[in-house]
Each structure stands twice: as structure tokens, then as C-alpha cells.
Length: 97
Image (cartoon, rainbow, N blue to C red; front, side, top):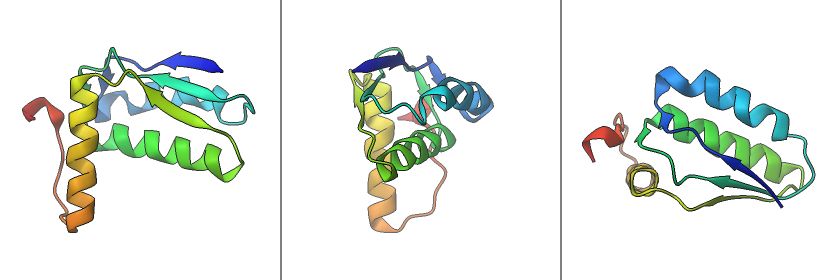
């Protein structure tokens, strides 16, 4: 299994950096673990990009997991999942979680 450490900032200003880091792994057939222990800041745009990446890999039978999620990353993911499940359309910024 390959591992990629996520950057500390997954804010909207850093989405291009995140995309550049993820892109080389999109077509990699090996399972991929995204280590989230360093993540300190998250916006919905960062989570959306992570979701799209995992979804696109899964569509081609490639396994991806997020491991060691920092409290910030875990809280942001829970907050966004709750908003989606409730049908709430609200901006999410984990700096205030």
C-alpha cells in the first residue's frame, strides 16, 4: 500500500496544491492511504476534492483510505456529512469547529 501525507492546510486557497499532490496517484493501481494526521485547517473545497479523488479511484477499482485523521479533519468530515444528510446548504469552515 502506498501512503501520501496530506498537507496541513486544506483550505480553498490550497486546493490547487492538494490537486497537484493527488493527481499522480489517480491512476495508480496500488491501494493508497492518505495520512491526515498533519491537517490543521479544512474548507469544504478541500473535502470535495478529496471526495472526488477517492470516488474517481473507486470507479476504476482502486482502493483509497484516509488514515490517522487529525481532530480537525475528522470534525470537518463529520460536519459536512451531517449537513449533506440534512440537506443543509451552508459553507463549512473547520477553523470555527
